[in-house]
Length: 113
Image (cartoon, rainbow, N blue to C red):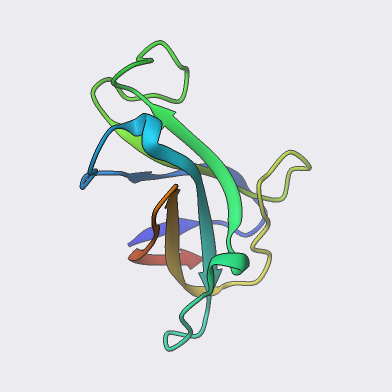
């Protein structure tokens, strides 16, 4: 379980571990957060974020060498991908879109204090 402070801003990383094909097959990635544990988001609900390829591009400042991550900047700064200003436990959802699939997974819970 990840934790962030509602008035802060930080990067959240979601490692892509099961990948059919190559990273070049990924068209886009996204994240979605909800306090409702029963809500399952639709593809259109996701906020598009960054895919960081630490295998092909380990010099990327956000990359961890040898890993592929979905990276979202969450918080109060203007450049953030999205803000989560209310404290609570949020179901984290990630989306990986390829030419043939929309893969939706729920990796964990994010606690905002």
